[in-house]
Image 1 (cartoon, rainbow, N blue to C red):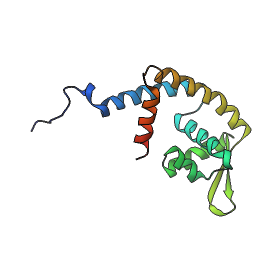
Image 2 (image 1 turned 45 degrees about the vertical axis):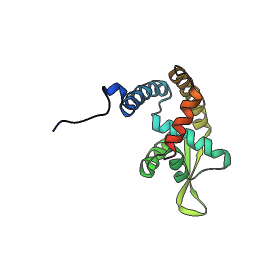
Image 3 (image 1 turned 135 degrees about the vertical axis):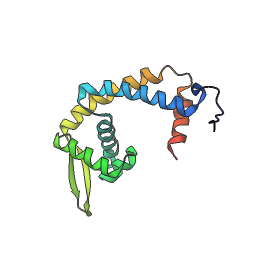
Image 4 (image 1 turned 120 degrees about the horizontal axis):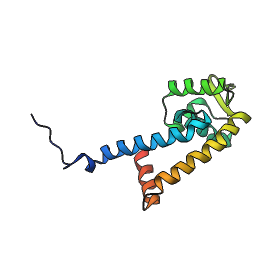
Length: 145
């Protein structure tokens, strides 16, 4: 049996191209975050806790939902960030099983330049596109599923 495809080449497949772009972008993110001694997941969870923290200390579950990460992995990564002194994981007074996440001053000191570097790399990486606003809107539609 011979496989069939609707594409004349792999370079026409949106999924394959997305895969290649994702790998390239991830390499750029790793390079941008290395000086801050953060993995990309650590950065995303730290930034998510900061974003959500504007309305008060979010639960660990809320951080995971915001970041789109697995709850177990989120717990492990936030524990590592707490060990580094970048966040606190306090018991939620309303639910002893839940943890409230707060960035420490050290966490803010790490996040601030890391966020600037990530946004700089994003601007360089995605700035090569025409119609960036439409691209972002399209990504947002895909992310809602």
